[in-house]
Image (tube, rainbow, N blue to C red; front, side, top):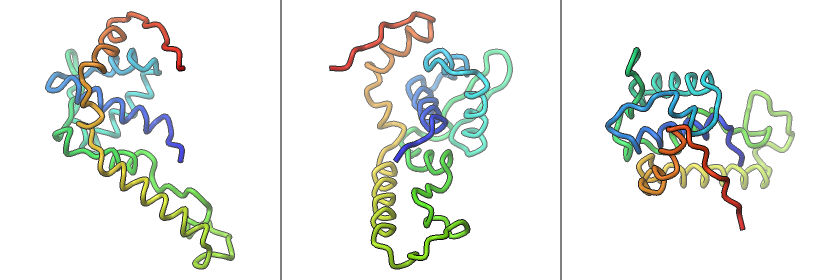
Length: 156
């Protein structure tokens, strides 16, 4: 499975809101932390607001915060919103399927089971869970918000 960067940054925006709760998070904070284009984050914040994950406050001193407790927002529901139907293989979409094996294919059934398992795991993880190591996350995030460039970590 591969999720889009849109989904990744939607989750990162919600994570940042959980870390800084109850304070407002500015779009520019997300832009600085993740090095993204502002219009991209504005679009994400707009969609997260329409979906009821965040509440937004316009104007000077505005920003966004979680609209529900972080523990009440599952990663799975955010992924479903941002990704739409995960048609991992062609036969998952009945409208565009051209496979003659629909309904009898063990491969399709296996991939459907794997997709369900994937969402079962994501449904069991909340925004609070991905923000649980708050101190470590903020140690990395706060310098980035202040415009300080951190050295890249080398993976072993």
